[in-house]
Amino acid sequence: MRTVLLKRILIMGVTSLGWFTPVFAAQPPSVNSKGVNVKTRYMMVFSGLENELLTAQATGDKSVLLARLSPFFELNTANHHRLTREAFVSRKPDAHKQQISGLRVYEVGENAVANFVLHTEGQGDLSVVDVWSKNGEKWQLRVRFEANY
Image (cartoon, rainbow, N blue to C red; front, side, top):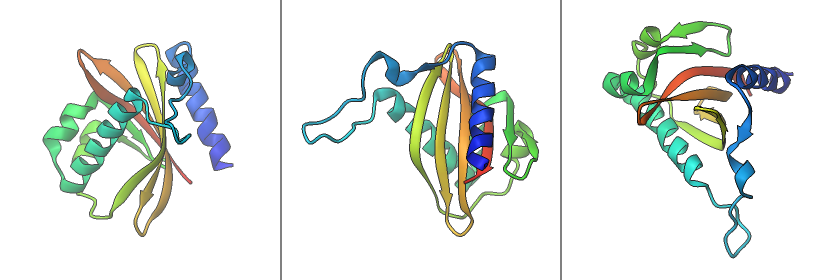
C-alpha cells in the first residue's frame, strides 16, 4: 500500500511538471563486459548531490543545505508533516548512519526526479522521491516526499 501511495505521489508530481522522460529512454543502460549495469553520468551526478545532502544533514552544515535547497523547498515526511526550508535547515544534526540504495533518476523537462531507498541505522527504511530543479548552472532540491518502506 505504501508503495502504491508513493507511486501515485510520483505520478502526480511528474505529470504536474510536464512530459515524463526517463533519463534512460535515449539509450539502454550501459553494460560492461561482464554484463553488469554501469551508472550513467546523470545518476552519478545525483548520487553525489544526494550524498552531499546526507553529509550536510549529519554534520549540521547549514551553508551546504542552504545552497542545495531551493528557497521554496518543502519536505513531506512519512508521518504526514510538512517542513519548510527553514525548519529543515534548523533541525538537529542526525547522528544515525544513513545510506542510499536503488537510486533512479528521471528527467522531466527542466527538472529531475530522483527515487531511492534511504536506510537509516536503527530507524528503518524510507522510500524517498526528490524533485530537483536547475537554478542557473546548479541543481537545487525543490521538494522531497518520504514514505515508510
